[in-house]
Image 1: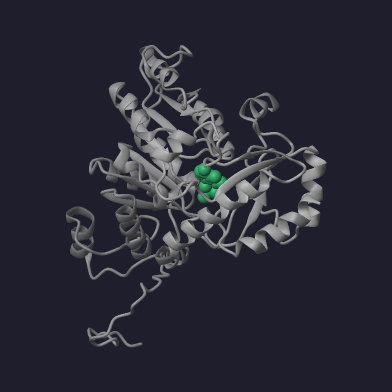
Image 2: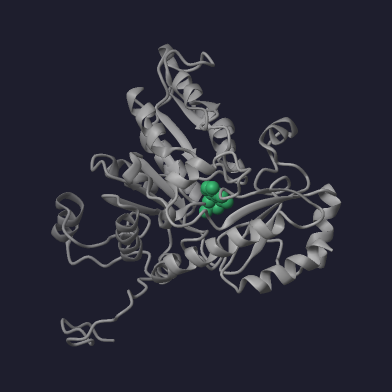
Length: 393
Ligand code: PLP
């Protein structure tokens, strides 16, 4: 199309945000560049720094999360990395829940230690233990000058065993100790809880999961309220190359209008399935926060609004062989080591998300070889049960 000041759209505009699939923008002149870079004038220069689809999605998600700002990253792990890179200095330490996604633990233990940042772990369902761990000096004796941790990092609902934490209480303890609370809200999503409203300093989500919702995107989100932290997060994303691509942002935006519907339908299915699974032969244990035997049922009732999540775990008596038999007998519940797909999938934490966790640590957390993690979808409950029943025969 020849260059023209007149938009071919006339007075119309697209209902849906267009995809700005461009890695760079043309800029009228050097003064215009300076106006964008120095004075915050609207405009884009280079997509690794910022692009319209990420900007738009970040705004929409900040509103959903009850946050002042939202920054999109190339994955959930990139979101965690951006927070750490923007806040933690060499010689400081991170205190984290002792029930986390395996890669997050690897990032904290294996990667941060290379940069002189220590990580300690604590049972975040034991508030007294958290208070002690936050107090100075460090219980592990690490950190410069006995400094307290810079960050306290938790998952609202833990991967995989859906342990639920009291975010408001943890925020208070963290702030009393001078630490920032970071909440990974991936399992809960803002549909069930908005950690910013409960005192979190940063919320991160793997958008790859329920929020994008169709297993065709890899993205992450960092949200916050402190305006001073926004440039630091943006800088970390740009310089360390943690940025997103426009098409993934566009796909994620496409899923937002149905997020609430999808999440609520999946939560209803998951609750019914958890109760049904508990009655089935060969199932030795079910982990779901609405169940009377779940250790955090009372906390879940307070922290989660209108549902107990789309994730559940169940344990098969026959261990690894029984899991393989289940996978072969129930192909309609694919073994797909992610979560948040529109239809039901399963994973095996011991060999996937927590593969690199030591056997001792797996045993402590209850991640056995017979444990199946189910990401429940929105298909009719009877169809899921029918397929599950094949696996349990
Ligand atoms: N946080 C949780 C709880 C997860 O389950 C995952 C991935 O499974 C991540 C973070 C990392 O997200 P991503 O795979 O988008 O990097």
